[in-house]
Amino acid sequence: IYHVRYAHDIYKSGVICLSKTKAFWLSLCATLAVLVPLYCMAMALTITRVQPTDTPQQGVPIAQPTRADAKTVLVLTGAKTAQTADTYVLLHFDALQNKVAVAALPQQTQVQIDGKTSTLRAAAESAGPSQCVAALEQTLEIVIDNYLFAAPETLCKIAEGLGNIKLSLRDYLTEEAIGQLRLSVSGVQTQTLSPRLFAEVLASEQLGDAQCNTLREDGYLAFLQADTTLLAAVLPAAVRKNSPALATNITATQIYDYARIFDFFAKEQPQYSALALPGRFTQDLFLLDADATKIATDVLRKK
Image (cartoon, rainbow, N blue to C red; front, top):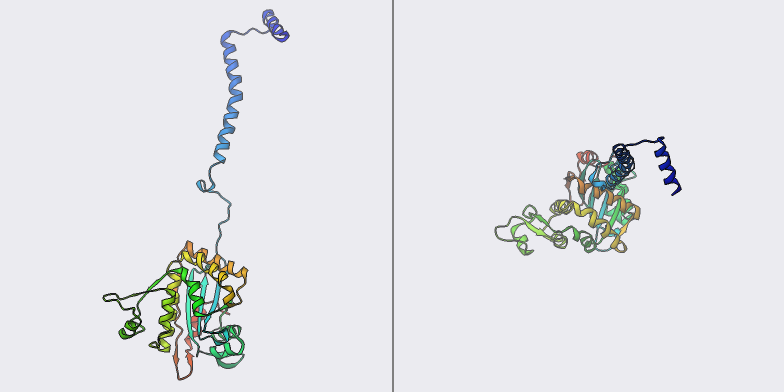
């Protein structure tokens, strides 16, 4: 009350003389001086709360593959143990080069181990999968990161989440043999194969060594490229789940490395290739041609 009376006295004395119009505009400006900054602050807060996916951000690193995102694994299968493995397949995954390659090798493949001639089967019998890895690295002059041995039924469990493939068996089997496997459908040129059915086909006595090796390579490649988005979702988890039944040197950390590579493949479809390393069968051996090493090192990582 005192201040009101004091202001009134000053006004009456003529120290402050304001018309009603001037008083209105002065009051309006004072109000705006308070409200405008508050409004600007509210708008700024609203803009900053926009979802990150709605506004592109600069300076945020995007994951890109590196030279470390490349792995080659030797997959062995056999009825009993790794020392009695009878199939050998190299799988190569390279996120930087964006490619997947498969090379199947017969158990009779002649290899070099510390200057001595042997076969893959003999290498496995003498010192297990690690000896096979060393032999192939020396023979083909490549780097092999890991090995994995699984019985056929375990490998089927690992691959079953990848779904089925469509493959023409007429390049590998006669019509009679396809009929015996109950896979022949009139008018259909390709067969739908699950991992288990594919394993049964590979076990057919109608397949010769060369045909079986080629079919195995083509089949593995077909499963890997059936749905690239499934690789990261299926294979790492399946390997972990079935690890008690495996003989492998793939560590838990390396499983994540493979998963990272597969994630890159899910974003961009890789190129697929079957190496079909050239060679010839003799009575007891599969002799690689001179070009086999060059083909291997052109696609796989050179040692």
